[in-house]
Length: 277
Length: 289
Image (tube, rainbow over all chains, first blue to last red; front, side, top):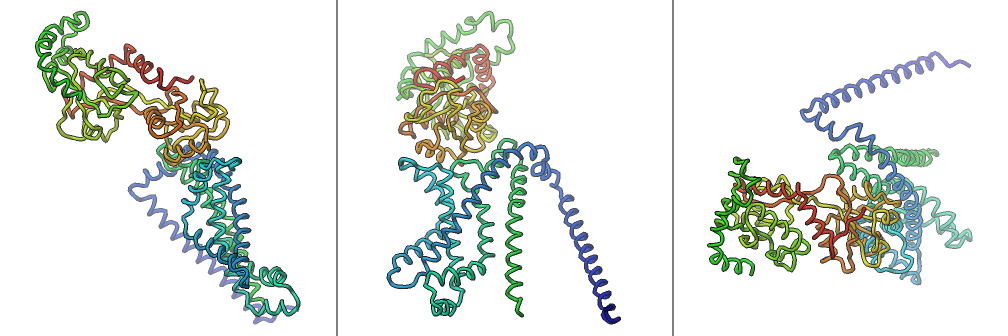
């Protein structure tokens, strides 16, 4: 069955409109891009900035060591984010336990989220990486593990609060309904509350993970050489800032997949929520 | 103490001085006589010094080992004490005509009139300081040094090869770090710290086996800061080393003469010998190769 002439006209009109808006968007982007390009490259100090921030030879020279540092960042990111998510979820569940018996657990969990969200990460890393080995205990883990633990504990506090917000956003009637169906509190949490809660807070959780990706580099305070430290060494050797730019670009590239996933998850959640409408 | 002692001797030495000043040209007839213009600028023993016929040398009080010995610059012991007397001798001032005065480190490099003819106190030559004072040619190029604690596995290391398996640390962006990567090339990646305080804490914690710092810092850390600190040894020269120079008043007439004396000491190997004796010798930092 062919569409009616009115429908065909409508389709043609929409196509014309689409082409027109694409062309307009391209034109305005080109104009803005040219303007910015002229403004930056035409600046009186452009040559000097280009020499000290965008030297391709220096960039290539330090790329291998920066990549080597980035490998440390990547491993730290995977391990720390998984551990921090687990810790966060655990603390959030503990904080939402009901009943007077669990008061000490709730109090401890609250104390933890309060103190470690307030404590600067740098100080926690210092305390862990320089303080704990100073005790000279047997089998002290190495500083990378200790620094990682500091990062996990700090980020765990943030993530716990995100999880708690998710758990509390699930209407109490859902638990009541689950319990009336005969599910225990644990089962209600596991099968009714948490699946909804985690789905709701997935975007902020991923957002914190993106932030974590940059902060795992602070491990370099304790001695290991991460990407930014490797770049810093390059900058000190050459008196040229290009290694920093190289590291910055690599960090953005590293963040792109995570940011993409965050956007996709958010979009999917929004679409699902509106699916019935 | 030192200055009071020397002041009292000034009067007694006056006659000797006059005699010495008179004899000075005769001391070096072969070297000086033929090259008359240069000797005229720096007449041995009769330079335009603070006190005529005397050379006044400044340093801080207390003066530390191994640069000086027993806090007595006048005993001519310690690296800088020995260098100072050698320079004085080259300028035509024997030990008896050298006066020491105590000047704090910061005062010596501050602008303004000076109480010394030259000051020797581990001064690094920097462009900023050059704005306020004159520097002689460098008499010492700072070497990188490995330090550790008594319980560390590298405490007895005798050569660079012994350090290959050690976990070493250094401050970021320093020649010390370069010394690790370029000279020692250890099998484990070196640890890098924001500053030497962090690195020192890591060393005391046993997080690293050894720490690379420059030689003056090594002496200071092992003597004053680390409880169990020991110097493993000095590394060969690497990168662009820091330079120590003698400080003179801005636009001093003596600068060229002092520089020439230092250059001569370097050329004839005297400085190298003194460095070996006082910095690498007993209680110092043995050379690693």
